Length: 183
Image (cartoon, rainbow, N blue to C red; front, side, top):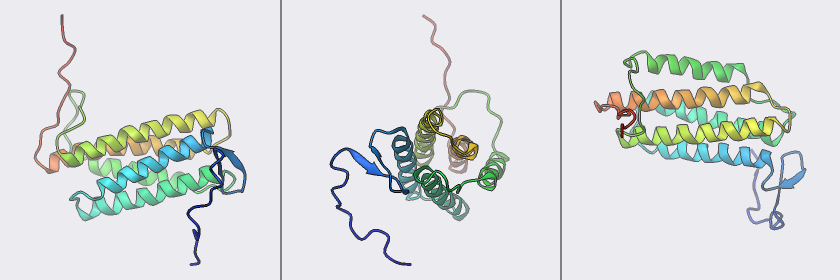
């Protein structure tokens, strides 16, 4: 494979614009760039989660998700070239089913926390939800594949289930909401 990035400092963004993969320049605050940034932040946080002690199957799953997110970003940067489809969404649904199978039913709202690893999964989940919100905002301005929204929606569900599974594997009870305080 040839060099994809030979120059890192280009100065082309000094005017507040950035380039899309099709060569168009858009403002750095453009809704498409905002969505790309959120997906990038999520991918970075998944990289942080991958520095934790995880079993091999989870490591493979999260690495696949990182690659999927790069594809999703690629589709955002080059809208006429779909890269994320139904098989991606289905793979997440299957992972959710596998992870959720051994978890007890929820009786209370779960608070982020427990182990450090589970807390990181919750941070990833909340950033995923933000990325999904940015994507839906972009969808009001430009046509998007429904699979992009579905992917991020399923991914946030997966990250929630993953956090629960990580606490369970560590033998740590899940922190739960105590309910509304009565005055």
